[in-house]
Image (tube, rainbow, N blue to C red; front, side, top):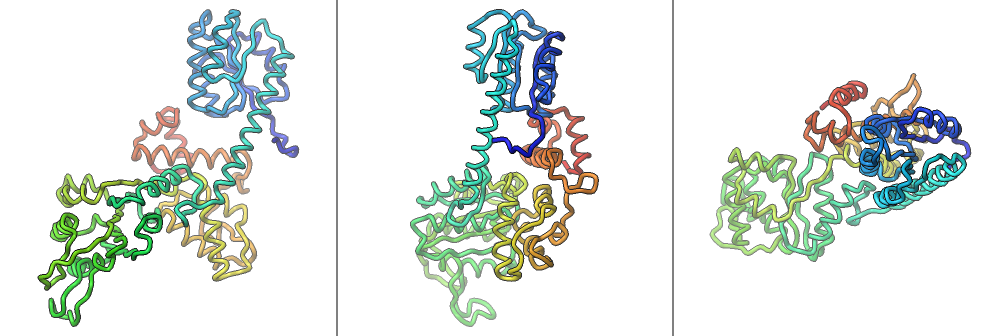
Length: 458
């Protein structure tokens, strides 16, 4: 429901080519912030910029004023771009069939010309009220969802990450090998542990090894183990990580960093399910599930012949792509609060939450280091905070500002939303400006202007 303290006028878009009716309708809705459009292009431009909750739409628009094709094109575009918008269609041709078709296509209601102002005001008011109720229901549902975890320990409210978690839950019951693809710091090991805990192997060991962190000459011994005397310094027989994970799960982090000679030996293990320790001659049967992760482009590595294609297909029976934090709308704030609770309990119990400028900074930051960067900044903030609230300066972040004040009004909220959507589009198109502009429904020059305005990089 509408906050009684909110004095902002609700927005109404009137799509009508008759200038006389434009003036009449604008006068009739003086309690609204009214926007007027006479063509499809004008209507969609205003829709993108203002996102009005209610639209009145004349189906007879130029260049087809005597038909309904242009009006239906506008209706279909609105339903695609803003499906929660309430569209009230008008027809000056007495065509009952057209208005019913429009309702079937997603319109909220209809009215016929000649215009009955009182009747239309009633329909618009009812549509606005319904839009507010639906928006509040979505907000409450999202709030409830954000208080829950998935995969046992994964905290998220982003649909993209919920989808990832559900995929992992489905494959956990099988023994399929899984590759987790994602940038550094996105939570690949957390997801691998969640997969293990949800699998029939949960009572076995979860053994993790970072293949990029171990020197090449030691990695083979770490993976396969060695016999006593196999090399200088081998004073006793030692199990490798693969053998230690017998009956459980082996997590190979940064699998793309395994050197080619060792890839051959790993492939042999995956084919035969036996290993030989360095210096040993006995084949040891090992039953372990392999889960891998990498931030590298394995397809490109295969093309460059730095990663074996046959090994990839053995490892990648299931591939799960993890989105970066910048693409997980709302997760930065949600995770930050969870980290703050943990770190405050451990290091600074007087800290109870975030100051408004810190929340704004968390929302607007690009998070190039993903969840790992977020965790580190919150830890720093808890340590540095002097009072009960962690500020943006404590996080070593600059808050977004508007004339020197933190932008918590509608303009600031729109800027935060713009930043999020632009980052998402750039991520999905790998920085392609034309593709990103198309996804966002703006021109290339407009996108360039937005990138400059928000100091974003393509």
